[in-house]
Image (tube, rainbow, N blue to C red; front, side, top):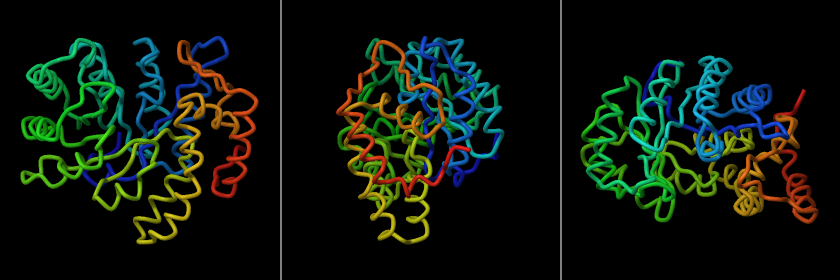
Length: 305
């Protein structure tokens, strides 16, 4: 666990894929590898396991194992954020307490959304979670879950002392983020974006404190962020523009693309995605990916040993 401060939640907080063997069992050796890769490639933080980690397909035993392995491998080198979204309040809180005990610096969660909770039920959830933890809590505001309005997010952050950070995603994410950052009470201390860093420069200029993308381009995304922090927006834009075709490709295939790239980079031993949801890449997809990866080879500074 690192020492909590506002400044530590800034930069590229990479989301490692959850590696599976070809029989879809958890590949712990590759999990350790992808965590080390995420740190060594330059990510400023780790978020695990969330949507890009296939958290929906994991058992609770596997999620706890991932918590334990993550804190062991990261070992305080960069901040860690545990994904604890569950199917009920009790489920999420149990996961969050385990993550805190395992040494995570903070947790991130969508409200449990399988039964479409009301706003008052969302408040109850965050009240219970806040009471159960001593570490910071991130709200993941994603349209796949409960889509919270800016006033609803501000109300939650004003009400509970541990809840000060937001990952804002989905339609109008940028405008919601601005509303959160410009609220008068300053109850929201930081907002990060998603969408695989597609809007990273625009988000940075809005005052957002970072992005939570899948970590397979940790070296490239962290380079863009570092250039922005150094005041070199021109240099950042040059790299960001080169990444646009990869972003388009990944928007079609999601986790399957992330894992194929990690496999190509020598980070994991198999690109297997757990069923259901294992999208097929045909020979034309592979040809396109080969071409796109060749075009950014000089940007991928992390190389397998």
